[in-house]
Length: 125
Image 1 (tube, helix red, strand yellow):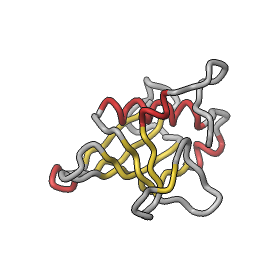
Image 2: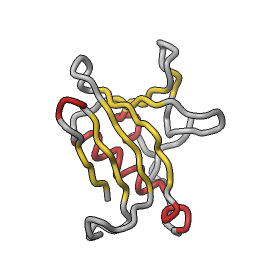
Image 3: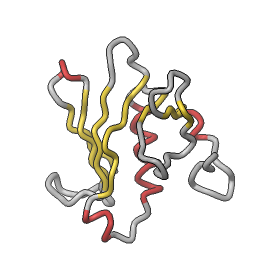
Image 4: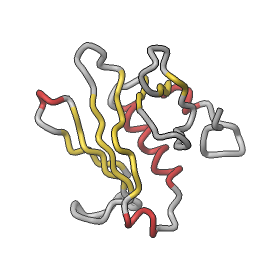
């Protein structure tokens, strides 16, 4: 389950917490966390900052795949079409490609819905 804590409206950002149980109480331990931001100039593009598992997430037996799928669904629900991020070498995001402007990676959210029939997750390119 994904919960967003939207920052003041003039900042165009939100803290995203990933929970294993949709019935988790508001202050329950979360498994993953990141910050998202967007601009009024390009309201269908969202930047992902600091996506990481927490100590609780690393100790959990829950895979990050279902959490990322829930994140994908939430981003589409909010009207975003592309996700942007920068990642350290060796760190990947599903279906991410270098952005043509050379600034980080880009993921078309629609690409994350093209799943192989035997998997609940998109193939990595």
